[in-house]
Length: 280
Image: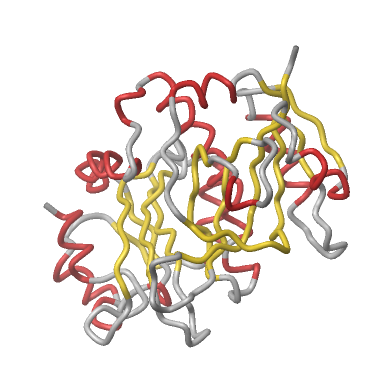
């Protein structure tokens, strides 16, 4: 009998206390028995649903899928026949600053009291909870593409599964130099927020761009482009983690994955030390 995966592309009202769950090969085998249910966004002004439908029609090949209303989620998430991909708000239980983040989670369903107990197969940082939607919506498609590729990868190579499962993607770091690195000026630390300053530490192809340029590269699956996906507070005053991920616009692979705690010497942005790492 087919089981079901639920994709929720909105922030759930509940909050997850984030603690890394390490999936088992059995968890992944179970996931591949599923059918995917895509849940319509609660917000009537949301503009991402049509893009996600187009993506599912053209690219989702892990499971069968269909679209369902949000009202079915709470009942279905407690059923072992289902698994769930959802955008939700999380906090790290060991962090002193109770910063809230949006993560894209792929989790297994079951008779669990709340979202905290649902086993995660993959969790990707998307944004701080209070950051405006336009800062990340244009990247949701490629983050879902990455999760699809990542799940297939760890299913075929279970030796990669660990509590720091994205670390092995840094092996791709050396390939960034052969591509053009797209960077948003506002996502760079002040000492590397101009072409001249970047060139001093990164003598390889790059371009300071706008969000529309990154969106176009994603839509065109440009094999020559790697772009920065930065997750930070963006002026929302709660300075905690700054995630820095380089993603291939064509293959949706991670070429670099790291984060730092924000402080005076390490501000909210891609740092000169990050550029030096990928320049080696």
